[in-house]
Length: 147
Image 1 (cartoon, rainbow, N blue to C red):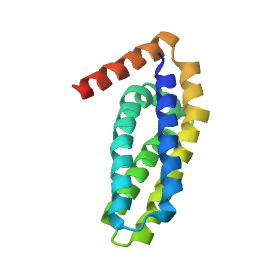
Image 2 (cartoon, one colour):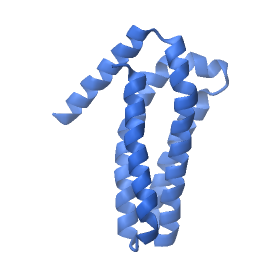
Image 3 (cartoon, rainbow, N blue to C red):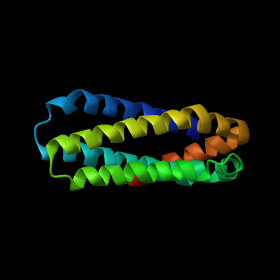
Image 4 (cartoon, rainbow, N blue to C red):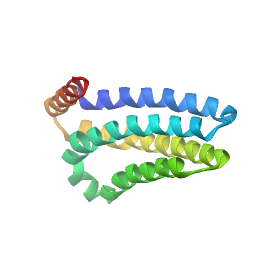
């Protein structure tokens, strides 16, 4: 399977998580609940972002540089990580809930940009075999993580 298909599948899982967060956020009454959802989101996004950066973005760096987007994708990952950290530091449930929902929105926007710009770019620039090889590397990483 191509890395682009794998990353899109991961995005679908995230969208389900984000839907859940948006659905339950209004009824969350404790800071611990908000922080728990933020920790879950952070853990899942960290693995996804690392894989994406190492296996997918690096081979396309030269393309991003040519269109002036090299820093944008890295910065967006870091902004989301900082926002999740802010949720963990928050002591006010309303503020933390608002911050978590802002993370969800930022991640959705970032995923949309990847799906509209980055994935099609990869399909045009990289060979099908390269995309499949990167998919196999992703699988090996996931298998190693499960051991």
